[in-house]
Image (cartoon, rainbow, N blue to C red):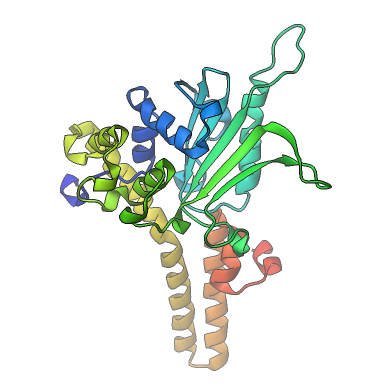
Length: 302
């Protein structure tokens, strides 16, 4: 199976790729660089992080292993949950909020305690866009805090959610200006590249490309990556496959019955089967509506 890999560098949207670059002790400087680029704030620059057990956050993987997490703490006590999600989930926002309850509770001290908490950041690298055009097409970075509805001031500044809608990042190599531009570009395009771009000559990216080069992996690492890559491609093709299969099944039933009514019933049955499969996989209801044309009520009833 090793010969099936044609890319030079790993795909960071895979479980193996994400953990290799951001979730290992030897590569934590990559994570630190990414976080500092993300915040771009000299007043809260991160010097080092310590990895914590991400299993404490709960279910480490979502439907079909769609979510990959890194959980760490900085020297000042700030805690970071960094996750890669390759497909939309129905209750993705709920899940993000739920995950923050663990680092909140972990800060509780036995005995007398004044309830002071350190900062908690959830960083979501999303290989999809939020549904219904929630954000403008040219806006891919979103920083959310608890705010007052009356005057929009930040009510609580220690709980922060940052989401990156990766498909919206369309800058080319000659358009990269900031360190964050460079990180977005390399995460979004790494597995497509044949060599390190001239715009990514920073020392940190030299290390990233060295760690991402598949040819340098031993047999065990290559096998792990191959399995992870297969899961990724299997999942990304599932939606199209499910829809096409359902549509063809409906058409075939209609053809055999030889009646317009039979064709319509067959199509309806095929579409319902598609919707049911998508729902089981955890695809968001808005996307199911777009893919099948069914109403939310019809989908809920499946």
